[in-house]
Length: 461
Image (tube, rainbow, N blue to C red; front, side, top):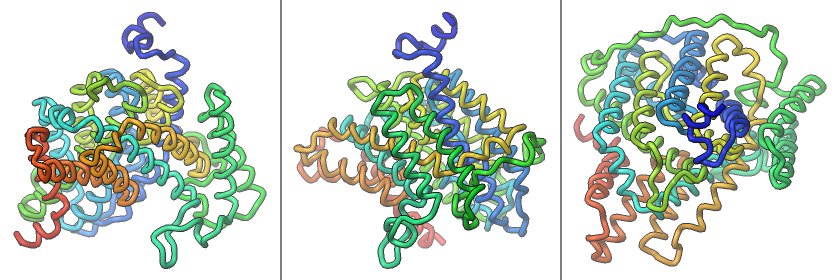
């Protein structure tokens, strides 16, 4: 225990082995859905030849890549972050890359993305960019991520849905209806009650209890198909499933440029790099801030190692054909349970590895049981708004755009980009050029190109 505590700096970060394990398990439960969802997204698309990927092989690849990447984060980065195939990034691969090239060629671009991010991390450029972002905007990123993950939880649970005549509404019909939503409400209220009573393991206990309730409800009542979401709370027919490693190593680094053309392949690669770069950056800043790991200057400990592992995770995702891996925002659920070090990631990574054999068991927790954790942690992350100097318009307007656009556009990258562009614009308009870090000019221009990528691609074509 002494050597374990020393390696992960448990005492320095004010935590314990039990708290770290509990936090790691909570992170796993909150992100386990990706093992089922990622294969569904990728297998739902066809490449330029009409070929489809195998769901059993994708399930194995997703779990393996997530486990290896998360364990690397534990040992190298000593951070409480779970990593897996990033939502949004897998959509780029499935619907922007695959229609113009074969699956191995699309995954080759993902490997290239990872290598480029590793290069940016090792060279120190990525850290320089993170350090160049004003501290107030870093706090705004935390708040924006809080709103974002809360919205994810509400949408996944069916509490919030697309409306008729409105972008969103309460429930699918404008009212709360159906057992899955009722189970979610029960789980959320239970979690809040346990948390405010400072019950150890409040989040994890609530998820477990709500899962049991969901299983009982599903057995007793007739539930419409897909009402629970991707994961249905049913006792599996079997406990063990054999992994299929057929997709490992099936990638072609540069074939996509020849098949799809240099312009198309470059645009896809640019989108992957920028999204992966800033999604992870925002998540790392936001979750670290919530964990109390950020110092007075907004710096994260062992940041270089963390950023390097994030790049390695992207490359691993391409090499396993599971799409680019990245830091998962659901790691905030584990932080809310007390996780502060890489020991939590050991627990998360170990459980992800077990899913290679026990996938049927892990696919029991429905969104209705896991989503309350995202809503509660989102509320906790909102408290970082007290650190934004709202009386200073130079910062308040960029901070607001950062916060608002993350949930409104369902993208951390969009929020960060809008905030940086607004910050540079406001400072320049007031003639305060000396307060703009030179790197922010470059980042603002990159984001401007990113937001105009469709027009840019059409102009070149």
